[in-house]
Image 1 (spheres, rainbow, N blue to C red):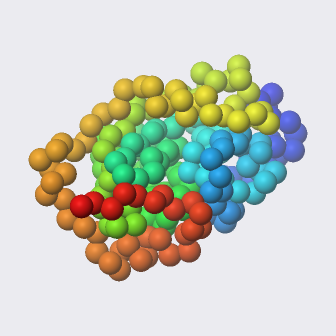
Image 2: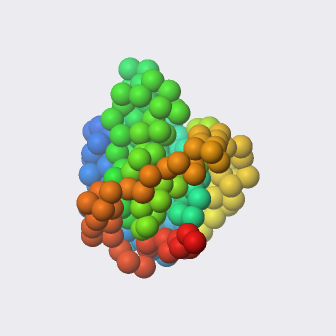
Length: 210
């Protein structure tokens, strides 16, 4: 990893992470950011808080210091928040790191043979406050090095343009209308466990189904 992407303090900070799960533990420790903003990894270090998108960007930058490509995947939902994960590969298997206001959409061990298999590991735990399973599609991996010319790792500017890019690219549908109609509601104890400790301001307020 070329040090020129960070100043000395940021580079030293990222070097504390020795394996992907160390990054996840850090993201679990810092506060959830409920504001509609996308801060760079540098600003996450300063402010010690991150939302889902910021967490994925931070994890991708941290993985980059370990020699991984800075990859993220966008997951789109229905009647719920979208989710972004940082992707890594070890021994030819996919894993993921993520920041979430819920408890069940975070780390995935690198044991998945395909990207779709990895994404589907989130499906049964991806639901809104009514327990409606909401994951609908996912993007191909996006290599954030394409935004290096905009200093995405260190800028003080809002990185909303990366979100705009994710919204514009192709997503792979994982479920169809006939299947959606047959989906069950998540069990109450799983819902309660998922949202336990969540920041109220950051919880998506879905429309109640008729």
